[in-house]
Amino acid sequence: MKHEMTSIEAFHEQLKKWSGTTIHITKQELQDWDHIYLELTNVTFHRQQPDIDGYRSRYILQLHGKGNIQNDDETMQPLPDDTYDIPLQDTAMYEWDGNQFTISTERALYKIAATTQA
Image (cartoon, rainbow, N blue to C red):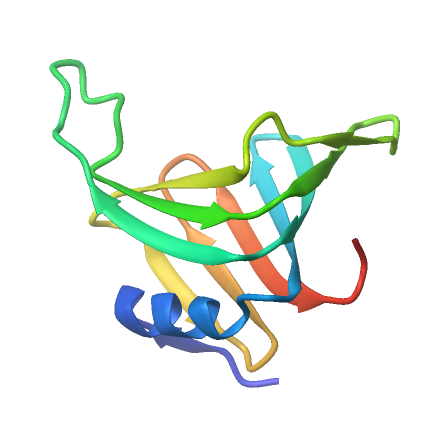
């Protein structure tokens, strides 16, 4: 399968097309893996004001909808809010392989794909 780098704009447009479907988000941060299943209803992208210590990301991608997170013991728990936030910096890279997106940030690796599992 061919992997292509893409822009945040193209990424945002494709995600909007998945509204009304369930998406699977895999997040890897260090040795921790999270699996999130979200009934995507909307996608928003916001620019944030930087903070003094540089901890807050410059941008935030918000995936809206009800969802669940799979814990380490493989049980599903509801997300605390009806949004899932992905913090983004100018250095984030976006890749599309025809079925899923990969977002590489300084802190984590995210994979997002449409799925039928809820």
